[in-house]
Amino acid sequence: MDAAILGVPTWRTSLSPTGAHATPAAVREALRRYSPTLLGPPAVDLNDVLRIVDAGDVTEPDGPDGEAAVRARVADLSSRSRLVVALGGDNSLTYAVAEGAGATGLITIDAHFDLRDGVSNGSPVRRLVDDGLDPRRIVQLGIADFANSAAYARRAADLGITVMTMDDLRRRGAADVAAEALEIAGAGGGIHLDVDVDVCDRSVAPGCPASVPGGLAAWELRALVRAIAIDARVQTADIAEVDATADAPDGRTVRLAALCVLELLAGLASRTEGPR
Picture 1 (cartoon, one colour):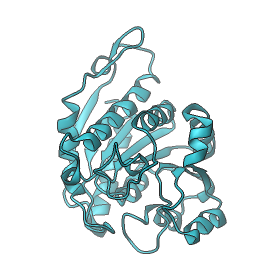
Picture 2 (cartoon, helix red, strand yellow):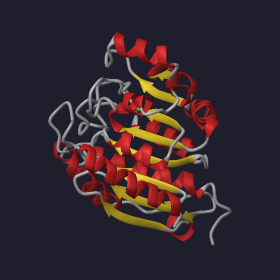
Picture 3 (cartoon, one colour):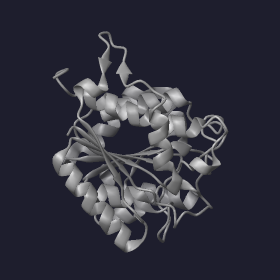
Picture 4 (cartoon, one colour):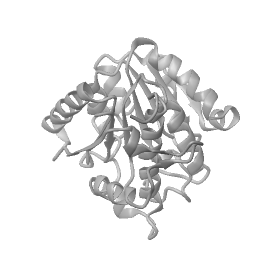
């Protein structure tokens, strides 16, 4: 297979009440709304150029036993595919998914540092560093003013993490930012990409508990995801922090998460030589 989609419905350690465990099923349903066609030219049907497998869900992925199960499933799928897309769940899934893939680099698209102490959806980056991931191979894109403490900003700086703020993204554009992030995170090998949808503006991501006014537009997130997914060093990715039970009536947040899945697959397809 070229790509495997795996549900990882983490939610039990979330810092805020969440129904994020309902999101993988909701994203799968939302994917039915969209055509898998890239307009090109020439037009390309992703189903014609990629072998995509739905690998089901990891049941009860929270806690030590759940994280071990996630690692094992991701390790297996990574050995048999070029890209594993993990559908969260809250952001705690990033820890076990990245470790399961054996990632040596990390790119986060997130308004928050996720460097908190303890075990929660606010701590995956810190936990990965504690377990040996080189912080000089971590790039955090979209870190937002008024969404983080000064203590975590200092922690990121002290660790040597590369931070590109929301303003940096808007000033430089997706292609430029993605190129630098890939160079830094990919210097040692495989990359895990964390797509935290709460980086987006509240108007397009009301189903993200921590999204705020002034975040990225939907098109900005989609462009950034595809620009990063084009690189063959990106071996795993997760979609995080969408609470399907708290979405707007039109399901706009879940629909955006589904489109991010398609953007990841579009990036993967661009790595190929064309239809088989």
